[in-house]
Image (cartoon, rainbow, N blue to C red; front, side):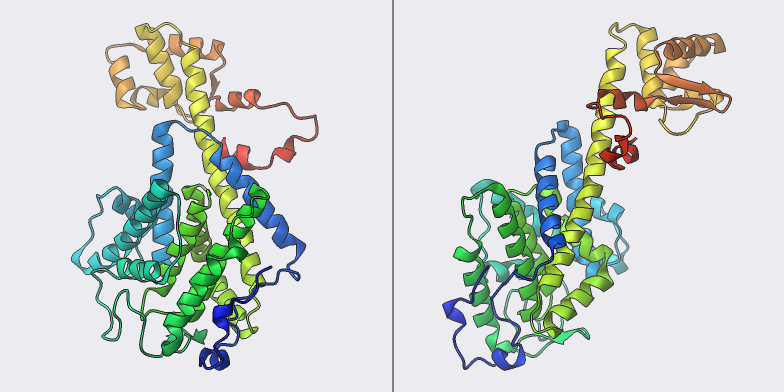
Length: 413
């Protein structure tokens, strides 16, 4: 697909002998059919996600949750031990940690701020153009306020040799500036430009550009520290600018963190194989599909819950005290677990107030009314909400093919 750029022709560069796999060249002829299938499936799921309306409050919550997940994953790959709950607290500005963990909070909040600023910039001008200056600024953000080794200058290309764990050595320090400029020239060039031939091809080009940017920054390792986090910020920026929903653009970081040992093996293979990037691209595409399916499961759960709430409200058109009490009781009941009758009054503070001063006959009348409306199921174990009723709102499927819908809806229920 893509060829080496003219700027890559300086034969005096040391990396040509030490890192011959850095070629700024991509040939997808050997890519397996599964790669193309996964890219197509990821494209389809991203379009589905982008066109799924959610109530504003739920949409904002989802954005916060996935910002937290993505930032936490990117930091966790580098050893940050804060969990997703703490990451969400950091996104919402309420994280408090012991003094001994303040550096972990700083690391995480640096990534959160950088991700939020990238997204804000893209929503303002619609672009994320990778430049050496941009990459340096991202690295400075990643390392802001952190204690780093003496040889590390945040936002400045390194001047010393560096080893990437036990995987490989970074490119020669004297070539870092040249390599970063070459990378930006390649990724911003015609090889990865939107071709106007369709949304699917634009998605492919954005995916390739994002993952290759990540991979090449990891290979070059232009900074003394923070290279992985900087690479994943670039990946997020490229995907978001291409029109992929920001909640989905975080998912590759989640995949890398969830499969961390495989992530490092794929990076190692990409260099030791002489620059065979196809396995890494295939690994990223496969992981993106899996993460998107989990995300769509979350979206389906939100939709099912919102549909159920709307349906229950529609069953009580008259706002009497009795109707409101019965409606609140249904909405407080879980769909999977049976709640013993004796516990119904205390399910929520609102229900406790509604049933204050009422006898057991009131509870019985309410349960009889809800049973008649088919909103609840009653057994000796207790009572549960019949949320599966919302399945009747789905398009009909020919008998025997119900499983073709997949497990997502069942998971949502």
